[in-house]
Length: 419
Image 1 (cartoon, helix red, strand yellow):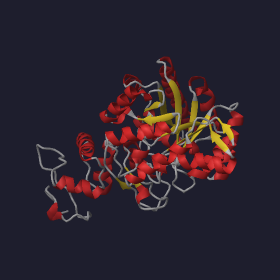
Image 2 (cartoon, helix red, strand yellow):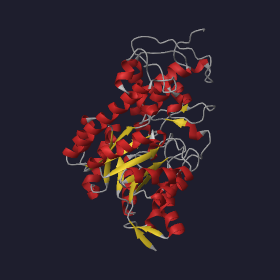
Image 3 (cartoon, one colour):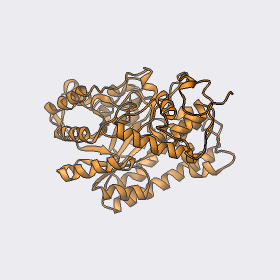
Image 4 (cartoon, one colour):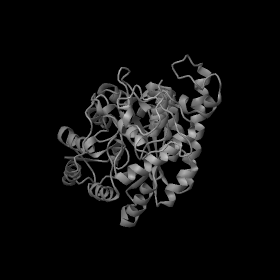
């Protein structure tokens, strides 16, 4: 066997829990964190800002002497960077989109522009506009990487939707950010890569960036995440990111244990520092909880709970869905945003409410999800509204049309219009 150096980053407690229907309570997460730490992985990612329970978990694990392995996944915000540090984080994973599709949706100037704010990247956008949103993104990301570096963090950058990014722009990002980061994580956010494309892509990026430290974080929408990740390592990637059991949003992430064992069996490569005997203890524990990834192409793999993803799909279906003929199924839980309710009322029920109402419902569902330790389907949310466990507005009646909803109208505890 040949020992190789490979940064192994675990996302089971963050990206893994984003799988619709999964909820890990504090005890389970603490158990998982310790089991995962015993495997020798170098990073265990948690997102403190998603909910105060995540911040509590992070702080608890710091006191358990896991701080050297913990990494705080953090949005591009100085406030959230500071918050991660207050939880005891020493490593930070800052993430931002790099594809034109997502950058166009999230650019603040575009969202204020009366011409472009309702369009998508498919609407024949002038090249000068695209160039500007790219430069805006570089400026924003660079300033936050520099800030985090000055705060004393070991910084990784996760390039969301990198597999759909313009190649030359991606090379520019890697070269510009390289002085401030320990690793540039290339995300195949929608799992669109193939093994052949992955190998060539990683090889070419390494050649164009003087062999920058590139990691890979691949999703499994097409069922190719495992082979794509192995080909990425063969091509020269210096890091891998995934989850145990391959759990995660939609069809999940690459299963770390299969990558590590696959490299060992196929190439004779053992990753230095990894305790291979401990890998099955993590997957056995997940099995005991009845938790497994949804199969690619299944109905369950079209479930979306994460707020930022649902927000983007409200304007551009292709932002987070590669299956144009399959309707996304929106779920609600700890990872939801106000956009989940906007999708419910505007896309599903065709009855818009105010932003204030959506935010009120978001706060309620997060609390309910933590209390009941679960997430909820669209149908279950309609039932919660009927039972007044979720309230839109206590001061006045809200009239909703449920004619296209399978829940019988007589079960609804809100007024129903005749339309």
